Length: 115
Length: 115
Figure 1: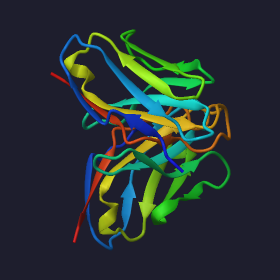
Figure 2: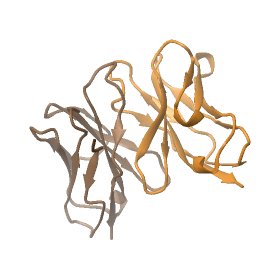
Figure 3: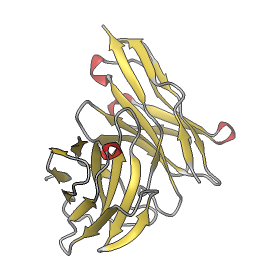
Figure 4: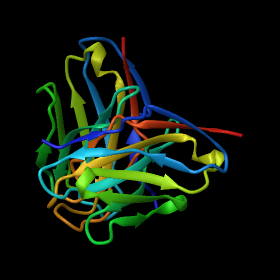
């Protein structure tokens, strides 16, 4: 079975540009989360979506937005890119929300470099 | 707000030696606790988790962790390290009621293994 897949794997943008990152969850998983991992740091929670609704948001500016589609795939959008947005963006999926919903599975990430 | 501290940024051990990685958390109640491993250029893989019950938790690849409420700790251990264990290890905490979602990660400990 396919795991969590993310695209693109690497991309380079310049300051002020916009980026869209994509994620396909494991089949049967209805919840997708996004994390930002700056080099040398632990992942930081950005968003969680479940059944197309936002269920949680971390401490990120409004330049960051996301959505989930009927097939449970998700996009993360970042506007007006800053140098500090350079990071590995990780998508994770889990089958539901609430207790006893199993394990969070991570994709290999999209590495964004902002020049 | 919940937080996680991993006091050791780097640890080097000899192959075959025992290993203990430290993790301290801050949370108002008994949290959900996780250890993840990240190999270079890879996403995160769950090693083990604690939700409730027995405070000594067994995971994959021969790892175990012990939840100590009095010390707010969840240290990861392995009796004999293999060269393939060289990676970055992250401790994470999740709020009760939301299982594996919206995790707060520590800054990570990079493990190097000497032959």
